[in-house]
Image 1 (cartoon, helix red, strand yellow):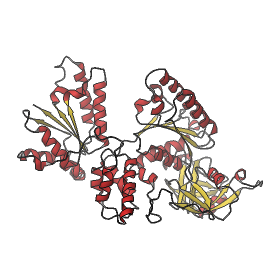
Image 2 (tube, helix red, strand yellow; image 1 turned 120 degrees about the horizontal axis):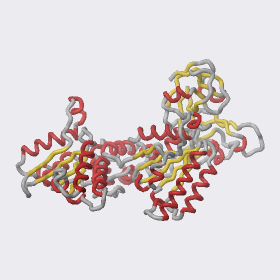
Image 3 (cartoon, one colour; image 1 turned 30 degrees about the vertical axis):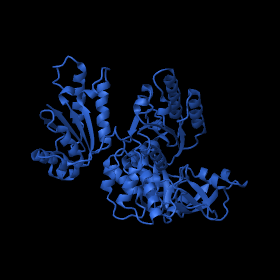
Image 4 (tube, one colour; image 1 turned 90 degrees about the horizontal axis):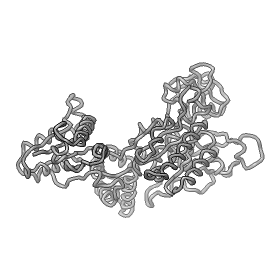
Length: 566
């Protein structure tokens, strides 16, 4: 978007709120202006197309007042290391890191630091020049960023670099973990930019009070990495509080109260592993819920402060928290599906010396892997590469995958049958029809879309017992490279109200998380009889739940439902 440069006095850029909203930055964020990257906030401007820049910022960007320049929204990674010019700095590195928290820096920038962070008694602002940003030429300063001078002997690459890999070939964990989460990153960054904006922007716009966002996803899918990247894009620092070892409401209250009081400037408080303190029903859960409600109120009342509640399942939250108006946005990071697992392996192996790796095979063989599991497998493969003084191959990575236990489980996330159609004698017509209805849509979805053909969402097999219905379906899953879920009809029925329907929902959720997948209902007639013909209201509810889930199955063929009956 084009802006007219006008002189300003703020350390960050200011622009018209309407134009920022049109750019997808309602509360501000990070933009690229000329040669540099800067924080931008909504505020009073001389005219709607004006971009207010300070003198130092104009110098960094290489622009002058009166010029018209293109301004682009960007998402910068958190810098691992920032190098400042000079052998000796006028400010201690730890103070510099704290002063630059949440600020984007670009190689060549001169940044101004408040004199209170300096080692002397001067009241003049401190100017330092950025001569290095690792691993990219631009990034944001976060809680994990190391700031130092040219004279420092600190390593320029993470200490976790596998021995023997060439310098610069380090696998950046955060970058790999965020692969495939671009939409979630954009959404969360927008919310955090709005909530941490100075001057209580939501209140100015007449919006209701909001504390933050609930972030749902199993361990290892990238919640921490997502929060840090989104906060950096919003120009905020992160205060992460892990609740894994919190056993008393008083301890939780102390932690969150301290976090709220010590937050200065745009800050995001990330309560990670909230499930650990959720507890079962009873007094403990009620007390924890009361503390969290106080916390949400305190965050909503303090300008520039937002929170993210990290949970593996929203059901772990107290109902009053989950339904709170202060927590209106819920984001879900599902376990990586086949496509994202492929992308994760591509990103993680991007800098590892390799030779013609088949990422389709790696994705198919890693069902149940979280993003952290993928990283662990790649590190294992990198160690094998160093020991053998060779390049990574498909076989080496597959060996590493076999040596890595899926943290998301294997049985609950389906299985991969070990035999295909070659083990199924005769039934040629059945195999051909199953190939056309299931395998083709899974392996070539774009062809069906281009021709406007919608593949079937489900198939019903019928025949006497012992004719091979289960056997041929398992072979079909192998041929399609799909996870296989086999369910006996009566297994999902539960005497407690709502439990059967929840079982149906959880089954489809697991199937979608490892798509492509096949759900096989054996004895389907026991699970879904004709509605109204049963004296049991549970079966009628299950039929309704099944219809709802099947209607929600993607027409791309990622999840296929197969029922079998006599």
